[in-house]
Length: 225
Ligand SMILES: Nc1ncnc2c1ncn2[C@@H]1O[C@H](COP(=O)(O)OP(=O)(O)OP(=O)(O)O)[C@@H](O)[C@H]1O
Ligand SMILES: [Mg+2]
Image 1 (cartoon, rainbow, N blue to C red):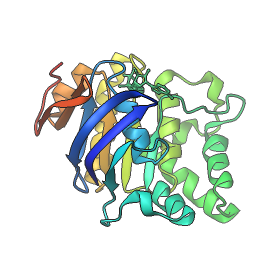
Image 2: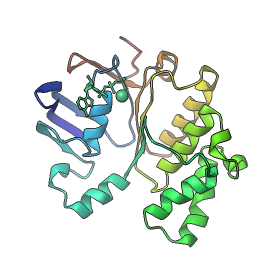
Image 3: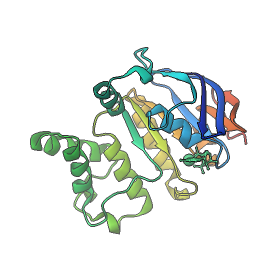
Image 4: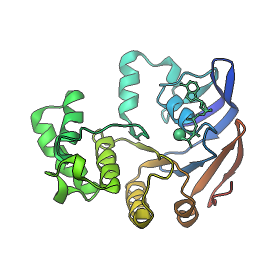
């Protein structure tokens, strides 16, 4: 997708100004920047959950997302798998029930749900935990449940908005493995993160935000703040 000269503001306060970014299908991109630099706002605009002050976002089919009808917007959003900082799971339900519930809400049939849930749980290595209640899961297992839920529509683009310091150090290797697997299956990966170790060891494209601008955009980048 492509961001063309976009500006994002909350009322009079500009967060990102005149940003241009092209992300090709199948790319792997880290978004970095200090807290408040606009990573989440950048992601929300891609979902069209935050409108732009100016500029255009063009999807992988060349359509300006501002021009979608409500139905097209829904379809477009389904092509994005989002793991958000503040996504809530239902603690009194199991891993399986949480993913199934997300599918129910989206109108999938019981047959589809029974078929699809084990598939997505397998992708995040959670099949063995499918009947475990979410309230008893570890942080990384919770994250993976959220990832499984984001995969239900088989999205082309996976967006992970990582909360500050939420990832356990010991899981870094697993996280990288999982992201690589998803990327190798052809998905575009966009991950907003503060995790220096992950960024530095993955050697992927790194886009850095600061003071409302892109201060660095490098293939094979490092955590350069
Ligand atoms: N709904 C909102 N209304 C007003 N200001 C907002 C709103 N959402 C975010 N902001 C402000 O916009 C700026 C960018 O926020 P954003 O959440 O995009 O940053 P971030 O880079 O994701 O930070 P973090 O690394 O902490 O997640 C912040 O100063 C924030 O306070
Ligand atoms: Mg954020």
